[in-house]
Amino acid sequence: MLEDMTLQLGLHVHGKLVTRPTYFDWEDICHTYLSVVPPKGNAIVGSTIKLKWLCDNMPPLPQQQLEAHCRAYNFRLNRGIDA
Image (tube, rainbow, N blue to C red; front, side):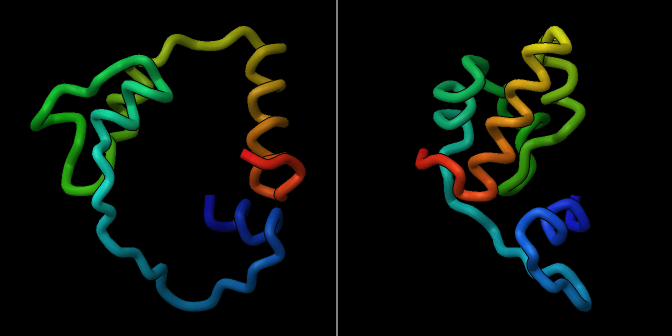
């Protein structure tokens, strides 16, 4: 994932990844963007959402729709469109 970001955004990454906690209301964000609220205690750990929970609770998209979502995501990453 970090290599993908490096290639897409042209960022030079050397050394260890620097992260910090986020203080978002993840339940609200998940409800707004995923229409699913993760259960407290096992899906959200600190300021992260477990990938397994996301995989288990998001239905698979048809291939054509998945490709369209990926393209839109890449446009956003590359500032091709405003959010």
